[in-house]
Length: 174
Image: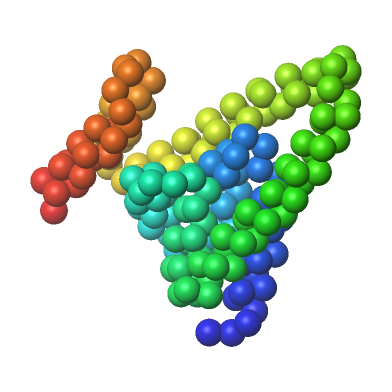
């Protein structure tokens, strides 16, 4: 394991963190590009599996980068990826919150905040498409993805039911 991998993780996830409007999940397509397309550290199916595992675990969604880092560089890779993804954006959020408190009530600030909402929604929708593409290896995964999407969208049940159902379907297909 060379230090170059840790630098690639730090620079890649550090840059991604700076554009994570809407949270870590909003930049999942960029994480996919970095991990799968640019560096080839895993394929799309592995990426989707690690994301599903991270969603089943308690804690913030952004911790999925820890699983990506672990895959690439073990414990050191996990720590590097998590710190690179969380530190820059944490400092930015802290600075912005102090600035926002001073500028509260300004019309232009409200306009900017409203303009960021559709950007975040679009980024999150793109994340869903990336994950769906990673599992689309036949008609059964596509059907499960479509049914899961409809279930989460149209019901008030916990998304954990979808994960459980997906696990059962996966076991049946083995």
